[in-house]
Length: 126
Image (cartoon, rainbow, N blue to C red; front, side, top):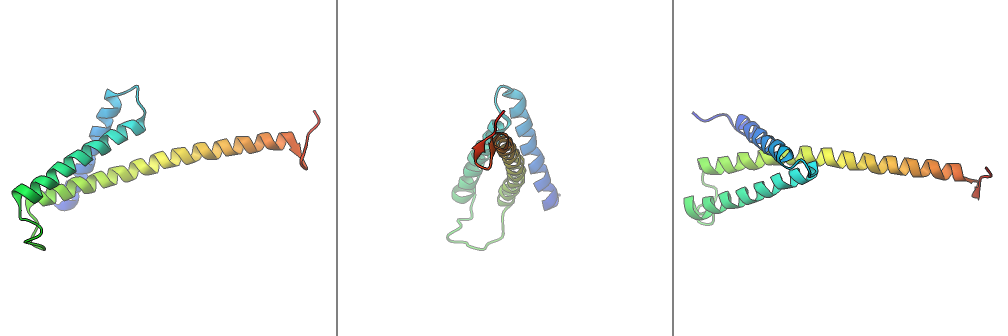
């Protein structure tokens, strides 16, 4: 018996997270974003190979049988990609939030330095 679709997507997400954790552990001298990009590369290679196998070897040929029911392998490819999409969404939110906070703190510190140096467009006297 096959697992329900949301459970298969959840397992795929856990697999991508486990691969990310392994990359982070294996390459400690690299950044977390680098490990995330390695997972992206792995997904790209896996998705391309799996799609090529489904389209050209396993079938059915999508141009001659459009709209036919999905095969088990096609559903597997969908679950792998959807789990990766959720993983990538988490990474984007994490890294974008971190970068925006760094920019905000840099802007705040620069602004506070400018306030100490200038008053009405003139340098303050110390």
